[in-house]
Image (cartoon, rainbow, N blue to C red; front, side):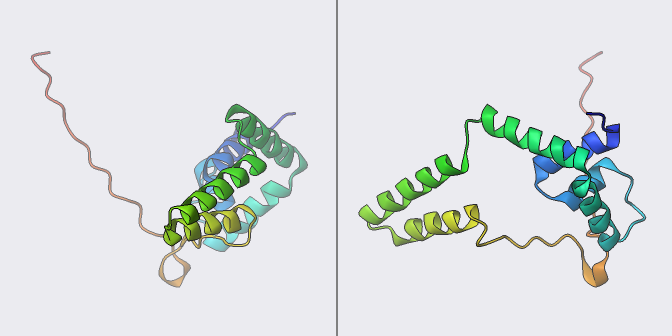
Length: 136
């Protein structure tokens, strides 16, 4: 399968972040694009059969590498929920229940990707420190 370097970077960033718009920002020069345009471009990339196939392959490799499946996660959360109830810690049981709901797509965390009026959020400040040269 032949992807462009940017398409491949998009796929890798998408697997890492789980967010198509953020993956697009990392792989392409989107500084002058509005959030809506980025969303549309990222969605089109995910609809590209070659990109979709690469994403599926990367997801499968990631899951195999970590030996993690939805069934295994479900089993761990059910075990945690039972343990929490047996220990009389309802907050922990609720947390495990919420984890199950998220696992099955019933709940999604809301993440703000734009600031006021749909503008990009400010980039975090980066501090640069000078290290002593120790006589070198």
